[in-house]
Length: 217
Image 1 (cartoon, rainbow, N blue to C red):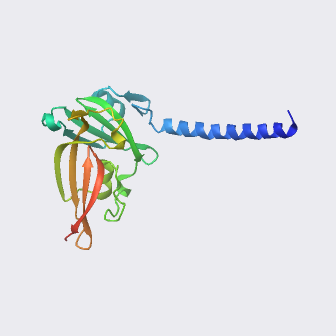
Image 2: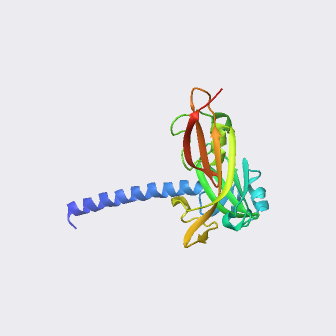
Image 3: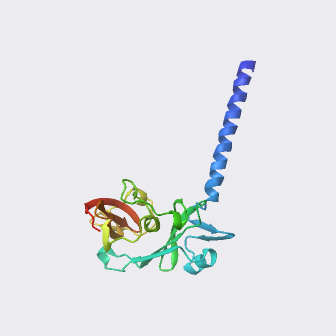
C-alpha cells in the first residue's frame, strides 16, 4: 500500500473509532436512563410488561401521580377495563417514567423528558408554547396547577403518529382503525389581563391547546 493510502486508511480508522465511541456512549446513556423497551429499573429491581401492579409497587414504590380512567367507546364505558397511568419522577438527572396498567398488569412503559423538583416546576402557562403537545398530565399539573374546570368523556379516535405502534387496544369500525380514548378538556384562567387556555388531553397527554376568551379576576 502506498504511504498516502496508508495514511488515509489510518485517518479513516481513527474517525470510525471515534464515531463508534460516541455511539457506544450514547447507547449506554440511553440504557442507563431506563429506556429499555418494555422495562423499568428502580434501584436493583426490574419490572417489565406483563408484571403486576404489586410487583411495580415492590420495585419502585408509590408513584408521584396515579391517573385512572375507563375506556370502551362504542362498546360501552369500562368495556375494555380500567386503565391506570402511574408517573414516577426520579429527579432532574433521570427521565420521567409513565407506566400504563390495565386490569392490574403493566401494559406499556414510556419516558417523557427529564424529571424535576416540584418546587421549581411552576411557570407562566399563559405564554405561547408553555404547554406543548405530548406533555404528560403530571408535568402539566406541576407546571400550571389545577385548572378552573375539567370535562371528560370517552371517544373513538384515529391513531396519531405516536400511537401507530402502540401495543394498546384498537378497534375496527366500518373498516377504520380506531383507538378508545379518554379525552379531557381542562380550562385555565390566568386573570383578566390574559386569555384563557383550554388544554385537550387524550389518554393522559396533551394533544391540543386552544386559546379562549379573556380571563377574569
